[in-house]
Image (cartoon, rainbow, N blue to C red; front, side):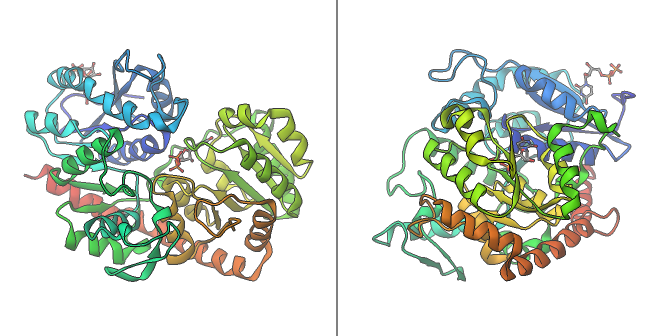
Length: 468
Ligand code: UDP
Ligand code: UDP
C-alpha cells in the first residue's frame, strides 16, 4: 500500500483497548477516515496486538505504533496483552488500570508525530485524555456500547434505582423510560454495590470522569436503531454521542478464495445450502467464562433441537468442558469450531438463519446487518441490557429460557431447545426475522455515502474538528 505523506492535512490518532470487541470498531473507523484523501491515521497498540491489527488493516495506509505493555503487573501473566487471554475476567480491572503505565511512552511517541487533529481512544484508556490536553488536541471516547444500554446505566445510577427492591429479580420500572423494566440481575458489580469500591469501580469512575471531560463519544450504532435514546442522551448528558455506525459495514474486502482454500466450517455451511437457510450459529464472544455444566447442557440442548448448528467456542471453555466429551454429545447435526473465525463472514453466509449469542454489542450489530435474528443469552457486562434491547425494544430476537426465570439463571436443555425451535421455525421467530431484515436495510442506508444518517454525522463531526 502506498504510504501517505506527512504533509497530509489531518492526522487522527486511534487508540483501541486491548480486547477484540473494543478493537474491531476502531479499525473500521480507521478505514472510514482513510477514505478521505487528506487524512492520515495512526493506530496505537502494543507489540502483542500488532500482528492482529496489522493484518486487519493491511488494506489501508494506517500507521501502527506499538507501545511496550507494562511488565510485572501483579496477577497478570507475563505475555498477556489482551483481555481475551486473561485466565479470568476478574483480572479485567487490574489489566485495564495497568495501561496507565503506558502514558510516558505514548506521549514520547506523540512528540515524534505530525500534529494531531483529534484522537479517538477507548473509554478504558481514560488517561489518554490527560495526554490530549497536554498536547492540545480533542479526544473522543469509544466505549463499544449502544446508547440504549448507556441510557439504562445512567437511569439506574442517577436515582439509585437498584437499591429499592428486595430481590435481584424484582422488576424495576425506569421513570425516565416508563415502558422499560430491568432487574438488579441485569447489572454487574460495582453497579449493584450500595457502597462501591475496588479496582473495577476505580476504573469505571476514571473512565466516566474522563468521558464527561472529552469532546464527545463515538457510538458504533445508527440513529434509526435507537433514536429515542440518542435524543435523550444528547439532551440529558454533557457528553455528546455521535452515531457513526454500524462500523462493521466498512469491513475490509475479502480475498477471493478457491474452494479448497475455504476453512472447513465455511465448506460445511456451503453444503448446508441445499437445505436453504437452516443453520443456527452459536458463539458467546471472546471474553465470557462458561461453566463446564452449562457447556454440557448447551451441547445436549442443541443436539436435541431439530436444527443444524455451527458452534464456535473458545479453547479455554473446551479445556473446562472436556473436548472429547463435548464432541460426543453434539452428534452429527452440528460442528464445533475451536479456532478464531471470521464471524461476519459466517453471519453473512446464506445458510445461517439464527444466532445464539451472548449479545456483545458487536455481535448484535453484525447480526442485524446480516439480517439474522438473535437468540439472546447475555452473560456479563452490559450484555443483559443489550439482550433487553434485542428482545423487548427493537424485537430482532428472543431470549433463552432460564430454569428459574432469572436473567442469571442456569439454562436447561429443554429451555434452550424450546427457544431455538421458536426462533428458527416458530411464529414469533418469523416476526423477529422480519424486523431484523428491516433494521438491516436501515443500517445499510445509514452508512450510505453522502446521504446516510451515520455518514452525515461523521462528516459533521470531522468538519467541526478540522475547521476550527
Ligand atoms: N508516522 C506515523 N503516523 C503518521 C505519519 C507518520 O506514525 O500519521 C510516522 C511513520 O511511521 C514514519 C514517520 O512518521 O516512521 C515518517 O513518516 P512519513 O514516511 O510519512 O514521512 P517522511 O518523514 O518520510 O516525510
Ligand atoms: N469475533 C470473531 N471471531 C471469533 C470471535 C469473535 O470475528 O472467533 C469478533 C466478532 O465478530 C465481534 C467481536 O469479535 O466483532 C466480539 O465482540 P462482541 O462485542 O460481540 O463480544 P465480546 O467478545 O467483546 O464479548
